Image (cartoon, rainbow, N blue to C red; front, side):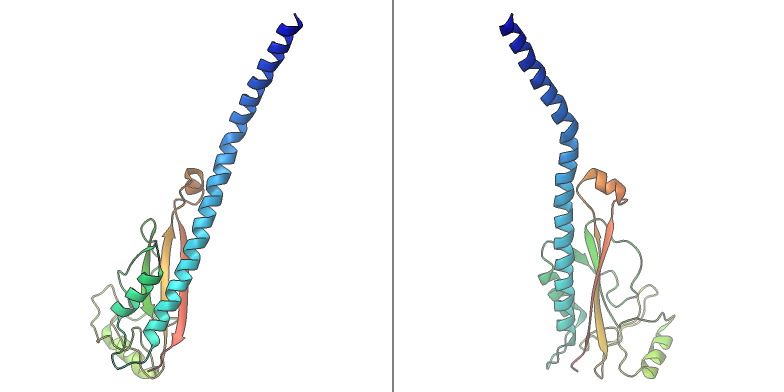
Length: 195
């Protein structure tokens, strides 16, 4: 009888442990994946900050062949390891639109770029502001296509800003729902040109 009673207590304790574990396991799994997502977020943020700094350094350097948008974007992509970046409109305007999931957009602009309506307005702004420019000095002048601003190469030690907007999507479904499937990370670096 005592043997049967001990066996019954052992089985009930095991059953109780299984029930407790089944109640706690989802919370632990969500916590674990939340920690992984937080680590991915910090890694992406640090990577993007390093990439914009390297892109800005490339954009401002003085050399016989001045850097172009392609040179700057290449420098940014080389330092943005494991991050997918594109450039729908490299010289602005910087939009508030959200990039696709786990992708980012690169912008090379003047800091605090003002909104202009046409190429004539852009040229008049350039004449008024000494050293204005929204592209590296090796970039050729370009006409606006209606959605992107015209390319105005920097000159006279004007500042250039490299900006990345990145749409980070967590891998944890619950966190995805809480963040509405995106967390926009922005990184920017502004340097004064050497030319």
